[in-house]
Amino acid sequence: MDFLQNYVELAAMVLFGIGFTTLLLHKNMIKKIIGFSIMDNAIFLFLAAKGYIEGRTAPIVVDGVQTVEAYINPIPAGLVLTGIVVSVSVTAVMLSLTIRLYRRYHTLDIDEITALCRKEGEE
View 1: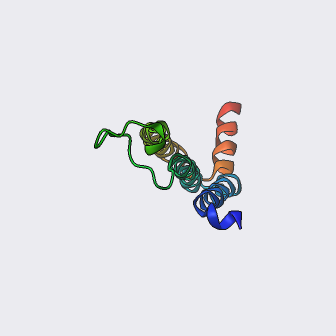
View 2 (view 1 turned 60 degrees about the vertical axis):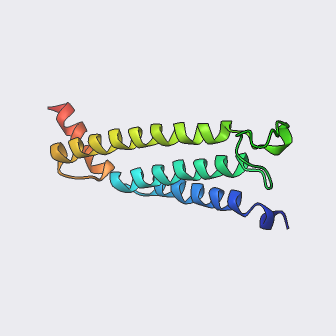
View 3 (view 1 turned 45 degrees about the horizontal axis):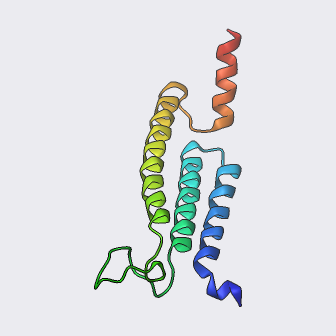
């Protein structure tokens, strides 16, 4: 019964698992970046779900109501927004490094890149 009440958190955990397995099992750099992005979004979904409380409103004083019980905590939303900005920046850096690796080694397979890098080191 708890799973039905916390379906958003459950969906976030499933998404995190999908992203984590994608990150671990695929050798393609683009697929790894997609898996990392799915994991980021799962964390943001989880934080947003935990920050929301049914029946409460945004922390903007309306009609003179100033009790804490009337409003949600704005900190999780702020953390999610900050995390999204950082995540977009990290994804951009990962994609730019992937482009550089592809231009140098003409492949996106991590095992092939490692082998080619070792050959360069031996020469």
